[in-house]
Length: 229
Image (tube, rainbow, N blue to C red; front, side, top):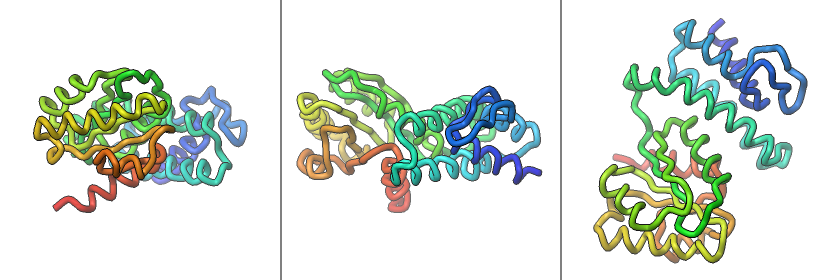
């Protein structure tokens, strides 16, 4: 029965259904339990949070990622699934803390100074939470000094910099230079993303990686995990 609940959870993530009132992306499933109802049922049955996340939420989002890459799903579809996972992670957070489940690492994410776009950043945050990372969202239009201060005081393992505009992408390089000046570049891995940037630009400014989207960010971070001693 536990396997049935987890399988249903995965299917509802794929369908982008937060609650029983949602229809679903590909078919009308209104009235059947959605992600939030299934999460509660799984917790009531004592299914481990690790199983709920890896076999239900993360497995579902992997399918969504595949559908998105083949253009079977579009941004609104991906957002529906990502938001369902985000709501689920909010429910699971106290259970994760109580069970002392280790996260894969602390990830700070920010849209740099001068840029207020946050849809891509928000999607990345949700997907990383669902993949087992502790995410701290510093917001949009964040000054370089504040980013450096956060890295210095809160010691994140990873820092994600987002910029949509060609006029603000240069700030990413400024952030990296400021991190170097404060002796922090060897203490945090910096990832960049956004419509304005590229892998070549990441190399140019000294970032550790460029991520095409949220799904790619999960792959890149998991690859970093594999390099840890």
